[in-house]
Length: 355
View 1: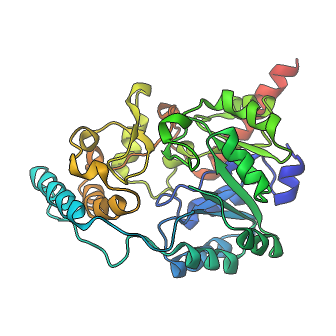
View 2 (view 1 turned 90 degrees about the horizontal axis):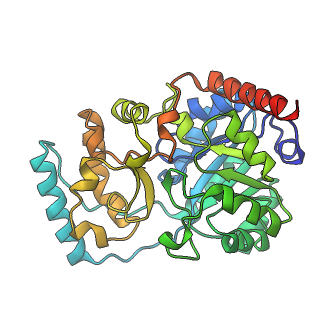
């Protein structure tokens, strides 16, 4: 299962565990990496010190290569405070109706400073760094390459994939419309970049001279092989790992994924202010109108108390239950066992294809 991409990273399998911010604790990352894949720490919500602490925890669990994923954002944000006040009022009313004893608060900062997160990532020096929501600066690209950190950009269109390749990326992860969680779109409107993976993947492979990683709806070894046939150097799976015991997704979220129907997966803005894919649940249906106009990360910060309270109360219907289109195919099991199962299925499918 080795390829130039796996050899570059020092991993055994062409398998990347997606950097799902808030759901990828060190135990999950290390388990995937130690099993031969590329575990990824989703650090988009983490302060710099937390990034360094969790990177140290991953290293303490094994010396296998791993990745850190960040969101490319400006360091400072301006918020429409009257709109924020209106959204807080409506979110508080929603929490009151749902019986959650918590209310919104306006944080000192809407999100960690990206430049500080990037500095922490460089200090942690993972094998790879992945980025979504935009292209990093030439100086930041040079810094990663100086430290021999493989740069992986996220793209939802061929134009975005080209932008990353021209910007110095070592590989591009193309995120099909089937992918769960936040859309990585940065050159287009989100609704214009909902391209199915198996249409986007061969187009991107044809357009680029660097490895392309496939992401979106891949849940088993057959899907990994199908992506490889279309030119992918590796497959990135996120939802498949959410129900692993090492994942920090709430118990209610995990249970809802097991029971998910494909038609329940939809594009949502009301939790964070940015298009993301997940289950249509009670919150999505009751989404306050005022909140819908607030951008990321402002709305994401405002809904954080609601999401924490909902998780503590076992209310999956009020959580941001991010997931990909094939969520119902999840198989709850330890991460190392899932990696072994995926690679076995991949080999079995490849053998059947060649017979």
